[in-house]
Length: 115
Length: 226
Image 1 (cartoon, rainbow over the protein chains, first blue to last red):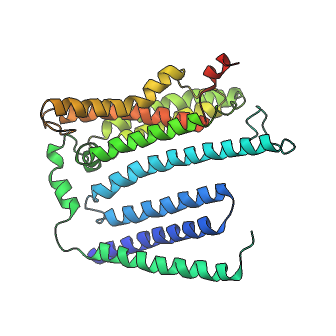
Image 2 (cartoon, rainbow over the protein chains, first blue to last red; image 1 turned 60 degrees about the vertical axis):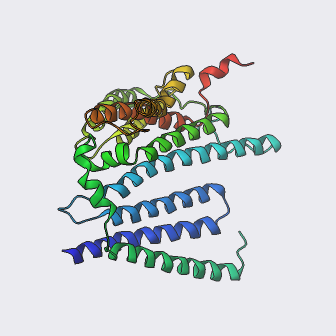
Image 3 (tube, one colour; image 1 turned 180 degrees about the vertical axis):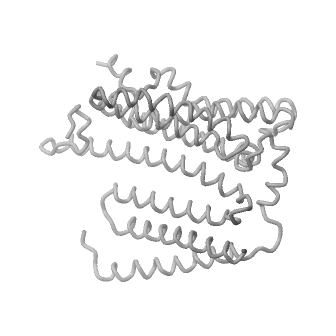
């Protein structure tokens, strides 16, 4: 049984590590900021995977509650940090489109029109 | 993007090295079971924490500081979003079909949120899950064309967003003045205190997530400006 738990932890945690590394790779090698933001979120998802894998104790035992609590708060913080980053992005777009008036702003909701 | 050949070789190499180190750390963390682990300590003291769900005990009792800071981070994120500009223009009002669906879904989400908040004491659930559902209700309202995502006007929204942190800090300080230490609940009151904090946190998280989705300071107050 403990062998099965270990394999599950390694599979799930290994997938989390792979997620994290893919996120780092994407963060380093892509220039657009929104791609970096998505990469950061994938890195975060990888970390959550690893924490959940560490907490696993088999199907009939309660999981370690400490990593679970960390993941729970982490998800909400990640969402709000992403929202803040998107707000920064909208502001950057707006400043850019004010500086170059012939280019339409990226955010089409700004003037109430929708594509 | 002009990636030089050196970069395309070097970055994967570096990443595999980092990956190897991380996997080694993960392996030794999972397999090295010597000594007392935090989980056993936490699980042993769950009965006196005021919540029989271990995750809730950790969140609201053993690691309450962490959760307080986390609510403060949410509040700071919302303040940052508001300071960056006005909210985006509202989506166009929903047609009849979507509107009637929304009028079913939103009350359901609120009821489910309340249920998750209450059940969090005994089973998986709690303030964060309930807050996420309330936030989802707000996002649904925003997507169907409500300009403020069903949130109150800004002065009340400020109270709502700060409520979780405020209740948390007030309870902590009250306990400190009673000589118990910051956020050290007396076992007899623990359940009531945890539920009070969780209720405030749920409302705060829901309001913050919905307000964050709007992407800026609510527009209703902007009409007063020239």
